[in-house]
Image (cartoon, rainbow, N blue to C red; front, side, top):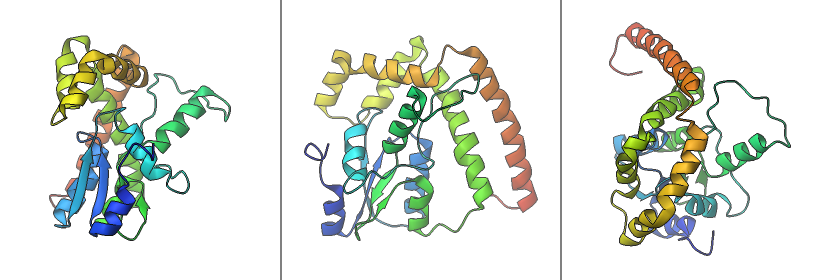
Length: 227
C-alpha cells in the first residue's frame, strides 16, 4: 500500500496542512470535514469510494504501526447478535474494518488522527459529552448507515450507488467501475449491510425512531438549536 499511494504524512509535514482521507458521503467523515470547515482551518481532502479507500488508508495508518479506528468503522449487520471469538471470521472482519476505517488524518507534526471525534477535537470543536458520543458512534451512526444502505443497495438503485461512487472520479476509476468493480463493491457492501434481511432492517428502523425521540428530548432540554 505504501508503494502505491502518496505519502500523506510527508505532504502534511512539507505543506503544514492537515491531510484528510474520507469516503465523501460518509456521515462519520462529514463530521471531520464540518469541524474543520466550522473552524475555518485549512485541510487537503482525499475522497475515495468504498473499497477504493482501502490502500490509501492502510498506507497512512501503518506508517510505523497499525493504527485502528475506535469508532468510525463498519461492522456487519445481523438481525441476531453473534458472539465473536478471537479466532472467528467475525473477529477477523472486525479487525480489518478497524484498520481501514475512515476518516483518518495526517497532521503536520506527524500525528495520525484515527477517528472523526479525534479529528473534530483537532479542529478546536468544544468537548462533547462522552456518553452522547457513544450513542452517536455506536448506535445512531451505524443504524442510519444501515437504513440508508438498505435503499442504496436495492437492485433498482444500482445507478444511484454508481453515481455516488464515481462522482468527481477520474476516467480510470470510472472505467474500472464499469468493467467489474461495481459488482465486487456491491457484493461486499451487500454482505456487510444485508439489504435482504428484512428483520434486521425493521429492528434498525424501530431503534432509530426511539433514538430520534430521545435526541429530540435532549435538544429541547438544552433550549438551543444544537446538541
